[in-house]
Image (cartoon, rainbow, N blue to C red; front, side):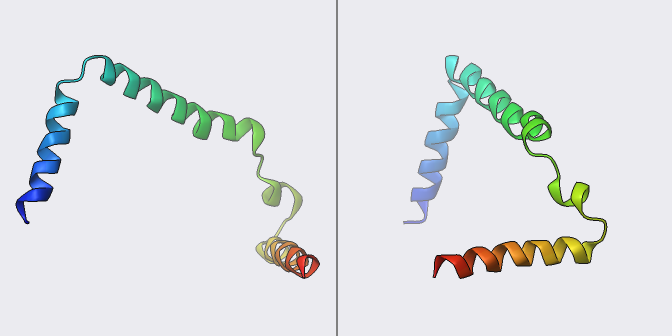
Length: 75
């Protein structure tokens, strides 16, 4: 029972070590993830709270109002 995780680990380790095209595909996947999360964040997700409110209290009050207002409207 204990050797089962070791067998699974060695199976995947050997499989990834022998990949040729797969390594290129993984690089493409990581580049796409980087572009989606790091680069596009700056263009499509501006920091609304920092630009529209000056203090943490104002930001917190706005978030609380938005969360409780949405919950109250759904009931």
